[in-house]
Image (cartoon, rainbow, N blue to C red):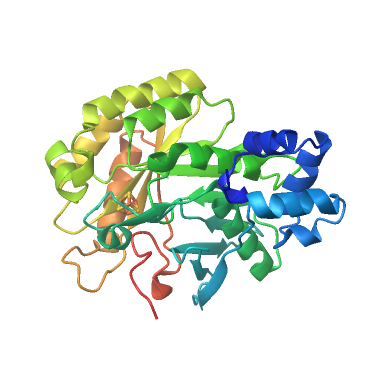
Length: 341
Ligand code: SF4
């Protein structure tokens, strides 16, 4: 069977090496060429015998994405528009911080099928899910462009990672592997809009990857309005599944809450959020929503965010206001896939 090498998990690469009759140490060599040295052709894998390279070339084609556009924000963040081998487009953002950290926000799908009302990606629909190696390629592109090591990864770009669960986990394992990208599991965050089955599976994973849940409303009717695809996965059930996550992992998760004027920013919404979070081991990230030109949904004033933070603090709920980076280049939350040049 012919399959792109980057569509395979590490275990599957091992199987391919076995079925080619090669010794098992070739697996690590090939993985290291692919994901540590980031080569673009089998010919560069000089310690792998030529005959094996030719065999792999035929059966497991090796593709690399191309950068078709790059925009640089006044705050230093950079957004890349990447074209995959079949023409699918994705966006990736590099976010440097003053303390030397370099975070990369990667996409898990080209487009997204979740159709959240405030999100530019959702408006474009889903093209396809990404292969494990296509997650990793995004990190290499940012790393090479910044000439600096990526320290943190957030799977918060285009797509719903738990709608592409197996490939997401295969990618995270490559990113985390000490002989490959070696980025610590706690420095890798997966953001889901709350797919219950995905969270349940994630709870069982042995690695300490970090979980973020896009909540955006703690009142069911408001959430149904802005995240219509999630109406089949009610807030009460989400709470139960998250309690199971905490029990199973002992780890804190975060809630993302983008404040939108006259949509989810009333006192009633705030009180619903406080009561929803009470007793949960969570951290709330209040996110300043970014303008999408033709969207009727607008951000709230800074005073509203400060008020929400103060009220959450008073209620003893850990909370912070996320600095929004890259909004001038449409790289901020909710803006990916919106502007093409
Ligand atoms: S917010 Fe996330 S899940 Fe919702 S449409 Fe946008 S990319 Fe998809």
